[in-house]
Image (tube, rainbow, N blue to C red; front, side):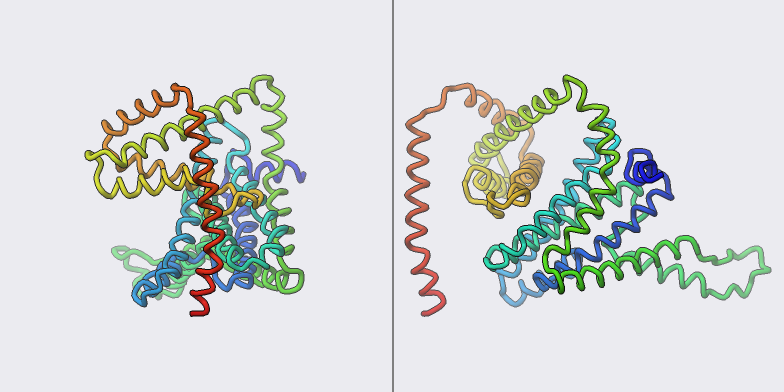
Length: 386
């Protein structure tokens, strides 16, 4: 009975009952993650309205650093939602049983990483706070988008403001006094009691999850996220195993996946070169030039928002943020300009690479890194102790 239940819960074939049952679990997980994250970094990570308001306040007060922090959280939430949409749409095109389970597997992996690494990262506050906020915002966006897609935008699990608003609307209908019930010419106001029960249940489970998450983080620390990850893995495991059993045994499956990954990597490499060329083209609008230079420069530099040595989390910017930035830039660059520079980038890839140029670039980056490492302590000392 358990296996068929889990297959219905997160499998490809959906029903209103399965959507509601899944939303209950995820509302609990979202509440626990949000509350635990607040105890870790003193910031709620699913509240985009609050983050945008804080950005506006900080901009008005001249706190540009805090504005950039809020912008990072907003981009992480958007990236999580975009990642969820990519996974779900890819699963639909491939007709996977795990179409809706894939985002849950990613979320579980991020929670495991956070639970195992949080204690070590806590000693490096300069890295811990921004990394934690980015990861938790990414998780909230990932989960909210997944539930939105699975229920056709009928259910949210992290957007409590919207659910409380809908509860208020239904309560207003419930308490409405239909004085003219006998008058057939006037519509009767009736509450959707089923919807009211569903919304109240989800809000209640979010609250219970918040209490459990806060208590867990208070008493056992970052490891409190591990039971949440285990719950998500249990919810997503059956459809994933079904796909592995049906597809991984096919001889061509792994080779097809590897071939697609290589094609994707080549396409990203070509597009990065193309937008770098487009950033210097006079036909490109100035705003597209700026964004193209930022995206290409970030993609080509060894500097990361999240260091790569952090397992799973460290590759989020390379796998999500860079491709997302490329897509945005391509939309802004005129089509004929982009086509021309793509052809130039493809032609450049076929030319043999210069070993001397590669060695020169390595030397320049190495010397720059040593210079920064040598000068940074003095700069920080002069900043904090003028």
